[in-house]
Every structure is written in structure tokens, then in C-alpha cells.
Image 1 (cartoon, helix red, strand yellow):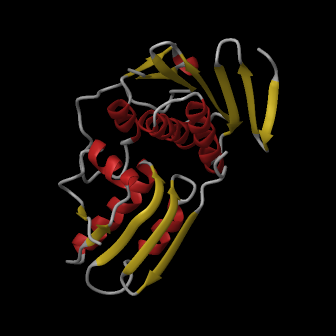
Image 2 (tube, rainbow over the protein chains, first blue to last red):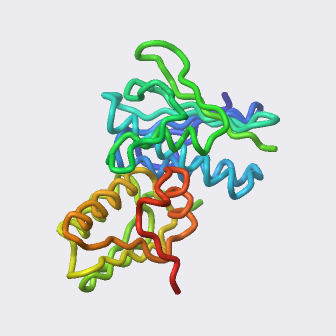
Length: 145
Length: 104
């Protein structure tokens, strides 16, 4: 890692420029969700991602960060964003609050909750929960081409 | 760099609501407060043309208000949806369930 930059209060970002890996950490607070998703969008945009990819990465980051805030007891939201040759990859720690993945079941239209992960699966090309127990993470990818 | 914090501006006049900014978990309580109880009488029109971002938290506020309107024999109309609003409603499979009007 090349070092860390504290851009904003309560958010820490470290970037490995040699590998294009961006690690973002923020307090688990609703106010931090926008800061994180804006940073994800900025990173993708500055790296040349299309508007559509930027928007989808931003939305996915917002949904997954919201899940951490609302459905886990984690003190921090930690996400890693990296651009690989054929896809953008976003990994968010703490998938504890998520149900098992089921991209085929559309949430009941009258339901007020339970749409976050469905939306992520709808806009990203590959979504999976990795790891076990409290170390479970959500890994999602958006193809570039 | 874009503004870091999510910001939301809501104006209400009778049953016309204008929403501008980002709707997420941090700001959706403001939208909920503006729509519950339903303002004015008759159809509630929510102008979302200036909504730059919305996620499932914002959608929840709209669905809740939609259900309250239905229960009161009124309609909640999502008026002039921005591209972000259109996209979220479509990917959520709610296109045929919410009242969306692309007027103006």
C-alpha cells in the first residue's frame, strides 16, 4: 500500500496505485453512506468508467453500505474497489444482515423492506457472498465490456 | 469531487411536493416526514425531476406514501422522474405498481 489519505472526517482511504485498489473505511453511520458512494463514483469516473458503470457502482455501494448500517452491529463500513482488466469489483465487509442470494425472486411490490440486495443483483453482473460467519463479505462485479 | 454529504430539499404546497437532491438512508426521513401524513387533498404529486440519486431507502419512503394514498382513495404520483428514479423503479420491478407520469 502506498499510504493513506484522510479526505474527510471519519472516512479513511488508502490506495495502492500500483494495483488500482482503493480501500475505504468509514464509521457505520447513515451520514457516511453518501460520502462512501460519492468516493466510489469519483474513483470510477476518474478511471474512465462510463456513466452507466459509475451510476451502478454508486448505487451498489449505497445499498451495501446501508445494509451494514441498518442490519449489522459493525462499527465501520469497509469497502474495497478495484478495476480489473475486464470488470470493476466492489467488496463490502459484513454481509451478516443479508439473506442468501436469490436473484430470481422479485420482492413483493407491497413490501417496504428487502430490496437492497435484489437491486444490487439486478444492476451488477456477478454478486456473491464470500467468507464465513462474521467475516462474510459481499463481492460484486460490473463488466467493463 | 462531488458534494460529500447527501443533501435533500423538499418543498410542499398543498398536495404538490418538489424533491431535489439525494434520497438515501440519511435523508429519507425528511421525505417520509413530508409525505406522512399525506399533504393536501386529492392526488399527491411528487416532482422528482431534480433527484440526482435514490436508493432503496428512498424507494421505501415512496412506496409507503403510495400505500397510504391508496388506503385513502388517493394517488401518489411520481411526477417527471429523473433518470435515477426511472432506473431504480425499473430494476426494482415496480414499474407497473407505482403511478409514474413523465409530464412537462
